[in-house]
Amino acid sequence: MSLLSLTGIRKRYGARTVLDIDDFQLEQGCFFALLGPSGSGKTTLLRIIAGLVRPDAGELRLDGKDVLDRPPHERGVGVVFQGLALWPHLTVRGNLALGLDRDLPDPAERTERMRATAAALHIESFLDSRPGALSGGERQRVALARALVRRPALLLLDEPFSDLDAPLRISVGRLVKDLHQRFGMTTLLITHDRQDAYLLADRIGLLRGGRIVGTGAPDVLHADPGSAFAASFLTDAALISGTVAEDGLLETVVGRLPLEGGPGVGERALVALRPEEITLGSGDIRGTVAACEFAGGAWRCRVHVGETELVALHASYIEPGTETLLQPSSTLRRPLREDV
Ligand code: ADP
Ligand code: MG
Image (cartoon, rainbow, N blue to C red; front, side, top):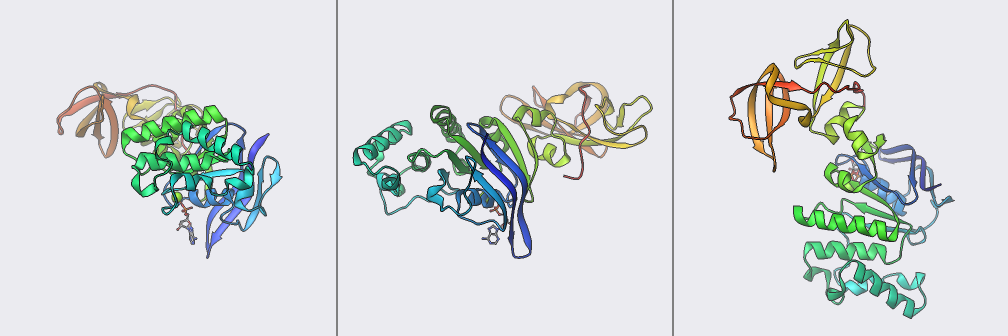
């Protein structure tokens, strides 16, 4: 059974509909990432689930129970807010203890819960410090501890890594993944960053303009994004359009590409060509390197073929202006929808 179930959830601000979710289910124990650009309604959705914003319509069930009329602290949901929202005048211990007496009236149980949570998040040594005295990574762990100390059935994370530098992102990301495995709580990560979603989630949902426009396992969505929007948001693919020839191949500026399903002879189709699907230095197509940037381990080259720009990965630097041969892989590609 789903732990979280949203049906027909709508939210408007003034004349604008910012959220319109027909059906969204989260399975017990999963790690789900909701990925969408800024302004797509991610935080609004999180606040509705947490009980901080009331939707105009729809049904919200947690563990089978309708919770729309329940206050936040009765929903069994832990939240790490964008920007963390720790209380600056309280110590770390004080931040964690807020409201805990409601769940655990026995002081001995509270002490033990606090100790176990602090140990899991490696924050024991600064329990008596105020948040302002801590580093970004430490504050992040405190915010996670505050969400987890009540052992919520559902953990909500709103852009939790956006203020961390790259190495810290990875270490806090691993910690979140370990905690998910250890405590087994269902986790919903909300982010605009596809790397965070790829790194952590079992499943990804794409949010665009308040609607969920695609869901799937990260590797499946990456290989077959389904729509032009998803392809541009999930990958660095170039979108290539062409016309289906008599033999069923798609005629494009980068050659004839095999298609899986889709339109008939003479019709137009759009496909995604990812950087790792393009070989530079050999092949049937001529292009000109426009730029070549070091991407750690490989070079990312922007190559122009006529008016079309492709991105390709290459083992070595190529001087901009160099003419090169290239070849897209002959993988079967499903045409992309252009509407969403
Ligand atoms: P995201 O988290 O994906 O960036 P938000 O959920 O914060 O998006 O916002 C979605 C849209 O709703 C934005 O256009 C935002 O300006 C608008 N919005 C959010 N909260 C309010 C509010 N309290 N009043 C008016 N508009 C709001
Ligand atoms: Mg947001």
